[in-house]
Length: 532
Image (cartoon, rainbow, N blue to C red):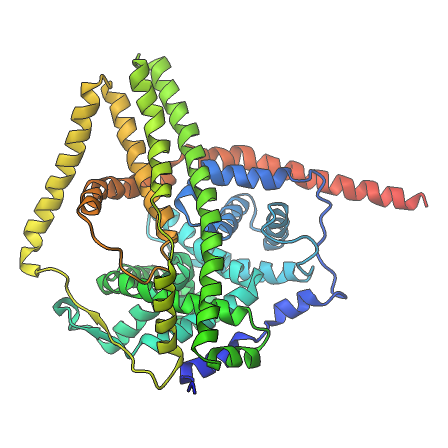
């Protein structure tokens, strides 16, 4: 007999609740936004193209919608402060890009989306930003806005996300035992706050915009009601950002994250099981039916997620390879024409190695096996059954802190050795210096992209990978490249000329043409109907 834990009982009460916005959209009598799709799939193909050749390759696929909302809003507020126009244009563009279904969003939601946007624009208008730092604060606020808009547009998913966050937090909060001397002075409140933040990062891969939104909810709940709440946030905006940044960059969170990522697969599978049930009654029956039923449910979830992960992996790989090949070819050809005259061997290495390396990384990925699934089912029982003994999560140092200086020194030497060997090898086959530098940049980018892509496929792996000497050497060689790639990616996303070209030179007039075409089709239909 399974005795459910209290957090699980509370989860079952809330998980199947349907938000008001979702129920309204399901009402066929409520007028919906309907677009004519005058240009067919052209807007959708544009979105796919933009994802391939701009910063999206450094994002997980689940962040593409939020990134799209952020990009559209950022462009729209550049040209107008009319929140009704911004809301209407935003919803139209999301439907064009197939982020939202046509004839799904209620027309009255335009006003509600406008109200959400207005709160943030009011903060931007009222806030007294530090001199020269406006361009740091405005995108930060718009990222939080994009997260709130995504939650509004997909309320059921957001509701279930928060329910699972709360469940994971409550299931683990009494099991975290900190033995690391660096964090002995943390208060219980600080630990709890960091745990909430890390749960969001581990369970849903939440980015900083979503976490900042949750922090605003916790510390400034009056902001969402407007009026004085907006004034308070605008007045304290500098202190708010500093405090939130400090929490997001807290070293305890960084130490806690790897531990909770290993636990997150338990709650991911539990959510899958709940979503396959129609109501809490069916869920209770499945979770309390016995080991065989629970094992079968876990196996089903793992198989479905593995199938999806393989498809997602292929999409991500080909998208990144396309990005690397296109941009690398443009850079290589530009250098060949304007600066250097390389041999065919240099040109082939220059263009061929990065995509081949990425392909090989994709082939090396492992997926959950039967033993992994069995262990996952055992861990799931531990969080749903109150009668099963719970195991603590020990946060301890994995190395002698007295050796930190020597480890840092060795890491620095590792960078010198790895990049030194690469430079020596490339120079020995005739690489010109400038070509060599661009090659190292793209090699680092590919290494980081490969790491990010493969990290998404490890979500359901609860068994540690067996260490081998070859694996150790590979990690040793790839570590400097991955770290360098992360830095390059961050700067590339910041200064990527493609982003400016796509957003302001191509996208703005392109979307205006779409809007005019949409109106023209509506006009022609109206005139045609008048003839009957």
